[in-house]
Image (cartoon, rainbow, N blue to C red; front, side):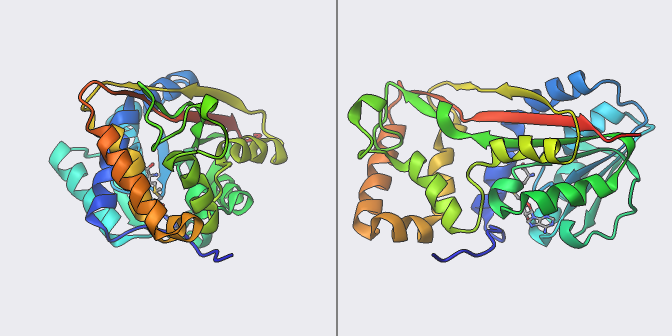
Length: 277
Ligand SMILES: C[S@@+](CC[C@H](N)C(=O)[O-])C[C@H]1O[C@@H](n2cnc3c(N)ncnc32)[C@H](O)[C@@H]1O
């Protein structure tokens, strides 16, 4: 099996997808922060912030007396995030190029460390959690968000995207194949469950909440499976062959063009807990 680090970058499509995705999930981030508590004046970190992630949400949460640090390993991500921060006037946000596995940030210096969709693509959960916890101050909070795909489907059903259960396991559709493709690319398709265990293994009492969104016809985020499939094209081809993949993609595109089709997103599983004092 060809397992390699999956770090999709330097593709305009990936930047756009991450910004759209970030906007879609901003209300969910605000709800999670509401449960974590008061953030005014806090110093917080968004690890692997990509093109936006929680930067705006955290900026509002910590207020003008607080500081948000966003890190990423990829220059094009940081450029896109920087442009957003400048255009939106987020004066309390600082962007730093930093590899989470060899971080140059000061240990135990953040009140909150957040990372979203990082375990799924990188597949190094225990190392990632250890890296995050090194940066959280005693008594501070670590928060992770990952994908559970089971809720991800369409109304009316779209069999090329995800086959209804009644059609049997052999006809699965593109979305279930994405998990296998991600695994082939070195990622962790079970990241939602993995993150929960990472808190337990670190001896941290874990809180869990979940969010699913209904997407009306025409919503641009309905097309997310196709964008994700483009990034995992090589692995998908190795799974089903080029001809079957083309057929699935064409059929999925046709399904998405249906002006009456709604969608439900994957489940965003949010976990958080406090480091011992
Ligand atoms: C799937 S994207 C998620 C981006 C963002 N967290 C979000 O939810 O919108 C993964 C991000 O992790 C970044 N990344 C990958 N390896 C990294 C590393 N070793 N250190 C820091 N960031 C990394 C990638 O450049 C990319 O921006």
